[in-house]
Length: 192
Image (cartoon, rainbow, N blue to C red):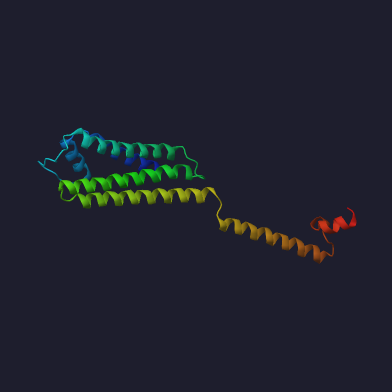
């Protein structure tokens, strides 16, 4: 079973962060557009030092790194083994942690710029990231549970085998004939 939801969520977040990185390249106007994509209404606001590439470039690069991590997670979920989600899990975990860190830095930078309403928008984005991560974990665990027999199935199989062994033993005792194949220690004493 392929991880369809995980692949979709990883691709979604890769596109979102790549779009934000692309928008932030344009300086003041780009950051206002990126904040508009996030849901913050910013009209006719001039941000301090956002025309300077030294300030905007690290933000765009950080957003692009997160987009690349989610793209890597997307490729990993497409080609991962359902019985071994650990290989993809580390990339996905790093991508979600990086995304949370970048969004937290955006809140700090927005607070320094005096942008109103940014905290609630970023809190919603962080909640969406958390929900996406939980959904991915749930899908991986359900795929792993479907691929590997659970302890309930193993216990049921052991119970059926024990009942069959007890039934065979009871039948051999009722018939008065001991099955020599089941007692290797007696066979060794008899020299067989």
